[in-house]
Image 1: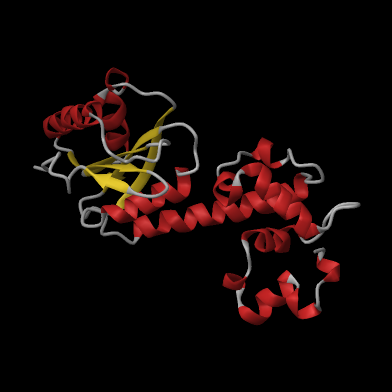
Image 2: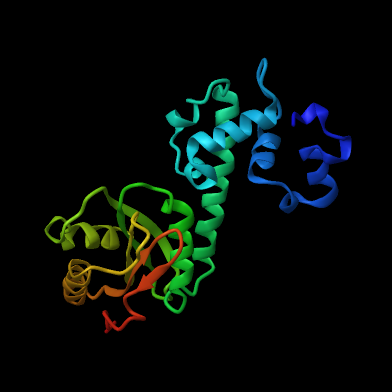
Length: 227
């Protein structure tokens, strides 16, 4: 049904103001951001089609600037509004890391990774640098796509940690397959990096493997013993 055909109280913007944004569907929230449709296409129809083409909200969140412009009728103005809203969501996820304590709550790291990278179709690998109180300094993304044990050098990890003046790091990567179980290669890499960190007096506190639906903390699994 087109927005114009809805009763005034049932229209997305009016219902958001009256009952709260949590009462709206994903398409209705996107429609509120878009504000208007195009010639022959109602704004709600446009939002529904856009979400369907992107693979749902998670697919839309993973879209880059160019792909946001692909749907017919979505120009730079509308695409920039959606891109800004998605970036605000990612920044809110980042703030959850800042509020720590990261060391005791790997689920906070996993939630950030799921919200920021969970919809990506390729694996991502990186490192989180921490200060002496285990508070976030920075999140680094180091690899995108296929990765092997041999491709990740300690120098890549600890170069960023030294520049950040980090006291400790948390390794992270995503599994697009949906299974967060670490491979033998993941465990071997983690132990190798932990050994390198000891030489530099920079602790590897954990390695979190995350998907959209779950995560594994190697520290919790006993696969990594912080010094």
